[in-house]
Length: 556
Image (cartoon, rainbow, N blue to C red; front, side, top):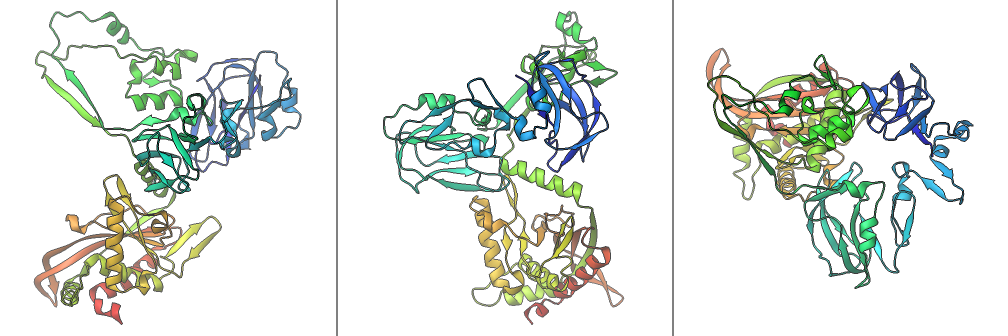
């Protein structure tokens, strides 16, 4: 049966694509992993490979033409197959469904809608085209979407084990998302019959998590056949860090090279003039497995390395003479899987850095009065504030006077926020969290200090809620306690600016024409030039300087 190929979404912001080059023409045979076309997105020109096998029966978008995502791009099927029904005005949605001789609806598992992927008490998806009725009272529990950006989750801890009774509202497990570790409660009552993911394992949203039902029910067939868009098969282990060791030995003087090494000395069919021809999927798999592509022979078109070549690749022992005196040693490394939090940080910061035009303003403040003010304030009973608390308060007051710095950018407008919610970056083992001090300008220094201390403790214990990390209008990152004198930060979107705070340094300074001992602190303001002009950022820092160098004004 013919498969409809639509214009793919090759980047998170892609809305339309342009066919730069077709690498196949109508009538050509297509293998899984072959490159069909090069498609120009809003970010780059990328190779688009086929996930189907057959004959290219139709090209819907010619070279140089542009079309929206999900527009008909091509049709692949059996040679000579009638595809007229796909070309007679059918929409993309229509093209994904076809009624067979028994009048059953068959949908591609990859293109099923989210509604079809939900498994409820009445049915569980057995494969891409069939459903299996569940025994009475049995419920399949899938990996929940616990945040708006969550794509996969990791089971941190199971609070129930197979055979335990479960009541509605009981906590089943703690699940690590891209933002925090959260408790996941059961919405059903019964017995925990099956656990689909062990502690430390990760899987896509909607993958099989557990099965609950009447005690003694056999659910082995359900667990074995469960599949939602293929996501259950993508669960992966993320247990303890893996340690790999590779020994390097001095070559033997008379040793003959193995035959496979001799073959490797010749350029691979997949390599021309130093360029390796490889499909994007195969390249990604090779990177994940640590495979050197120059050692892989491609079996695809014109020697291109495709998915099956990576799956079937077995590293060969190699030896090469590198000189008379060769040191003997051992290379080793620890391999730590990326946590969901680390993946989210990488994605969000990369997006900010490459979409927001950053520029930086550097200042140095006199901290003599701030030091004296803090010492006097902390002399009060049961009172202790930090320099960071003072900076949060000073920024909040300055932002009220400079709403442009307290703004957000949208394609058709800027949002100038009249409220001040300040995000305070907190380092945790897995990366960085940014809890938010809400209405910071209205809070006292001790209140700010108590809030920041509470959030920092929750962050390190992975107990911050999503609500406590949302809604910031400005962010502060302070590395002064680590002795860092100055640094720059990446803007925490959708904020328009972030302040980097360095250490207080004792140094000679000039006052009234005399060199005297002093204490100064360097700060760097990173601004989004779409919303904050240089003069605007400078004026904000001048206001901030007034509060920091004369902190008593924050109490007026």
